Length: 85
Image: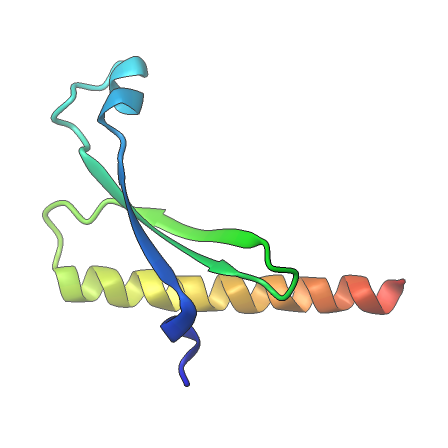
């Protein structure tokens, strides 16, 4: 089973956040994020991005590829920390 099968995609409405930081409310409306639970059952935020105006297929392929790579790096760091104990 591909690793990306366990990744959750979130759509986050960030209009209010952007307005508080001086950006016009039409600048960015939604951000897409991916997260996954690690072996300790903690949620790990892996990627976030705005696909506005981009090729959707290419955007999600890059988002998932980056999420998989970052999760592998996170698991390696957990394994390294366990070995040092």
